[in-house]
Length: 133
Image (cartoon, rainbow, N blue to C red; front, side, top):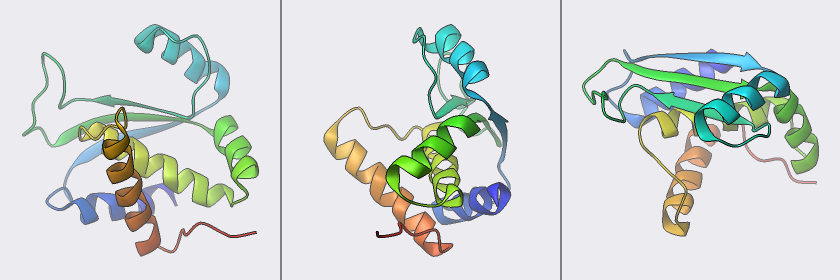
């Protein structure tokens, strides 16, 4: 399922069908350590993205996009909290991570709205729509 979502996202975004990325499925303890080390935030998070295209040594022509780390603990908890399936939550986190690898951000309200709209578009294409209660 994770591979299917990633492939759909890369296809939707265009020209990235041959791109490479890694997705690591983790737990809260491991992702907390990564979050503290790389972001200075000492708490677990749901997803972290480490882009090979950004930063001082970044290369936007690079076929390797980077690495995504997803906490399965957070995904389970958030699926329950938001009232949808674990698969839907994992799909959301995969797409969210990929968009971050490509430089999308959600620091400003308009950026967040665009990122959420693109995420929902991709998830809808593969049938991972938000369930209603």
